[in-house]
Amino acid sequence: MAHAHHHPAAVTALLPGAVITLDNVTIAYQRHPAVHHLSGTFPRGSLTALVGPNGAGKSSLLKAIVGLLPLNGGKITVADRQALGYLPQVTEVDRSFPMTVIEVVDLGHWRRVGALKRLTRAMRQRSREALAEVGLAGFEDRPIASLSVGQFQRVLFARLIAADAALILLDEPFNAVDQRTVQELMALISAWHRAGKTVIAALHDLDFVRAHFPESLLLAREPIAWGPTEEVLNAANLAAARHSADHWQEAAAVCAA
Image (tube, rainbow, N blue to C red; front, side, top):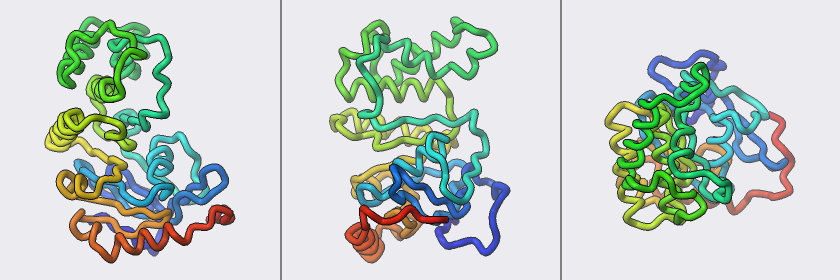
């Protein structure tokens, strides 16, 4: 089972069946400690919610796994970076960029396009199918600036489908998205899970997490608990996370890991 206690010895290799191994990971963000001393593994095929107070390091951890944030200490091992798909918070994506819906979905193919220098007809067809899967058939030529937040989030999900990622990291994928879209995107995530993909999602709605996510990592800069959701999200752990958040010093020195 995934565990959050400190390893007696450094884990350098991936444990069997692990798609991500975190070994005493510490991350500082904008000079403030964001994640402290986090160790554990995400097993292949797991569906994990990343939960905790605002500022608890959820986004920072996802960015560090992707490689967008440097570590201040420790090590992150990812089994297959080529298979990684990442969805940032929708507020971090510039929607004023003059692109059409299909062009954004086509970006999912970029790793395979590399050698060919062009999109094949089969790839474009896959992009169209991905849009149909998220309920946006017929939206191909619309500029992304014309979409609602919910529609744009569907487009980003379609890009993940086109990329055929086996490891999918989602940062608050349901923020500012209407209820119907939430249900449909969650159905998609559940289908990915059934297909053996590994999914990690930063979320804040604990009832939603309890209903849909078998595993949870509760983070309040330091790991509070990691394992089966019903054990992790118990009253004592949630109180510990709140207590930890109440005592953060914004001026705290960066942890020298």
